[in-house]
Image (cartoon, rainbow, N blue to C red):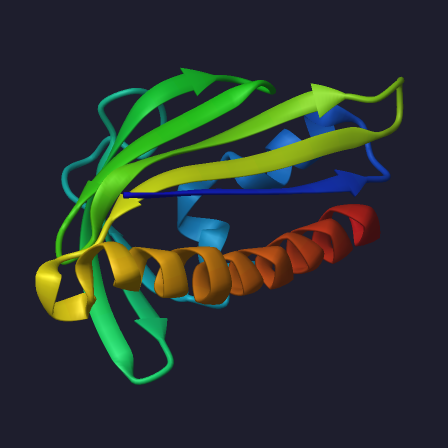
Length: 147
């Protein structure tokens, strides 16, 4: 298992950051590895929301089945995902004064044996995914600060 944590400080109040993060279908706007999001059912917000996320990392294409497990507006969004790589993740938002927010993305991922198991988790998680997610958070910061 690999635990990955990345954060970014955004020059915007928590409400504005949540306004960009809350629409799950828009995550493809700032997540370079998320190609498409398709909801399973009519629910698109809150605990119990289920969706498929088509993911591409280099030549590897995966489809994760995701379920929202935590939903506290302007504070937390949690998810579990199953597929080739399984695990749990969470976005947290913390106010740094009235007009600045720390956005933290943490994940616990389990890689299958054919993606290297624990070694794949170390390389794929701590090096590759961490770099991609840092880039994703820079994109989120640009989008939020421009809005």
